[in-house]
Length: 172
Image (cartoon, rainbow, N blue to C red; front, side, top):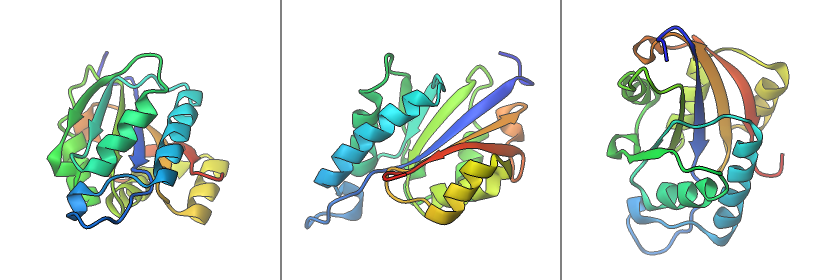
């Protein structure tokens, strides 16, 4: 893949987590979260994006979300569990995405708010009116995802270079 070809980024917030007596990093999914994660996987498949690489936070709820969502895919993409995603700011997430090899065309990141929502807003210089309107109205609830595209090498990813193409949240 050449560095100038279009690329896709899927920003996926973990599904609804439970609140047992564990550290925040170890919080598992709630029952609703397990249901929503699987539904998000089906909806991700409907977007037609063939994910080449998934970057997933090491937190329990993100790993569980990804396991349930990817189960809906016909092929499991390479997955890297990345501790830098946990509690990352949008700027830290951009720096992480800038490290992506240019042979990766479509990347999915499973992370947390406020970083994931902030990243979607910062990257989107333009938006499909329907997707942008839905994200503006709904915010970025648990199990939501945004699909953005941009052209150029990953190291050129910066604010306002992408287009928000699709957005989904549970009960959309």
